[in-house]
Image (cartoon, rainbow, N blue to C red):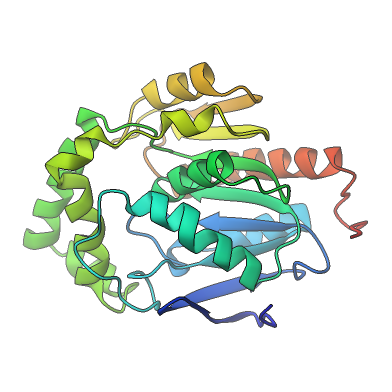
Length: 273
């Protein structure tokens, strides 16, 4: 196990992955593990990790996957099953490296899909629940259309310069994600079969105006999951409710985490092994 400082890098296979650890360490309290979106990274979570740690008393761990933020670049092109690889090959190593003992996975967009794949594909008793912000379980036409549009924006507007402030190799970050989603083979991507194998409570938070997915994603989860599913649809929010409706999203995620952890006898400041 790596001794965690507040910030640093983890060596996972051939990559150096940047991370932030806010609040108590995994040895001292439950840990909320944040999994970022397809163009996200540690920095793009903003102050959400800090506020989540303050609201729950739990530790909050965020890391940038390979190709993002200050992590080492990913090999391109990404395969169409890249989220499965992140969930089943990389994430278990990250959890072991930080000494994860128990807590929740909290993912946004691609990160939410990765969390769902992990929870449904890895029998890990340490995971007590998953909170999914704007998840994708299947590919919709609206997803492909918006991702094609953002490619045009990246190549013709100031979007590339804006993203370059957050990613050390911005083309690696952007084209790794964008190229996989626009690969014709990706239209068959479907992780709904993983949902039936999730054995912990699930929360889904989605903006009513999400430009990358419809409420069909929630309908799939409600139909496929055997575990309890809580949903929150936030009016006026798009694909990033933790930024566009920060207070409502924070309250919902923090409340879910508190209830799940208390339900396992893990009161915020009374954590024991």
